[in-house]
Amino acid sequence: MTDREHQVIRLQLTRAEDMFQVPQTDLFSEYRNFLTGVDYSLSELRSRRSRARVRIELAMPTTEVDGDTAERITGTLRRYCDHRIAHNKRERRAVRYDGLWSLRVGVPIAILGLIAVVNTVTIAGQGNVNLAFDTLGWVLVWVGLWFPLDTILFSPLAYGRENRSLALLREAEIVITPGQPGAVH
Image (tube, rainbow, N blue to C red; front, side, top):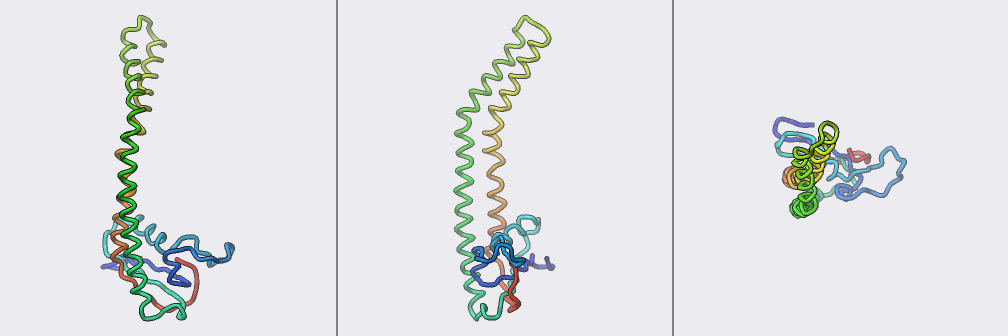
């Protein structure tokens, strides 16, 4: 799917609109498209490590291709990518904000856990009682901090990966060749 200079994505579409919306077709047809062309292209790009330029080769029926089809798709693809990149940036901020707000619940739980761990040292009993309080304390610390830190640090990474793929897709070269109608991909 790649040449030396480009990442090549080949799609077969029945109409130019299929690049952006799933067409209405028979659900049981062997030519049924379950993804839009953009979604398939993003999936391809996200699964690769390459940051080479992208060329999308579209095969479409001759009746659907005219002189400005490639330009229309290119312009719409750029607007789509710009909108989705802006959306992902807002979502990334929102996820981090959710993580910060979840600290309101997580920090008190973690503090209770630390109190349980510290109190195991002062409990006169030995053995199972100390082990139970110590284990329970560390579990509470972990439960209290895991979700907020995971949300703040790791959850937003998916939006960044998608934005890198969208930036590549935004600048994609669109090549249309008249062909037989068929499935997307």
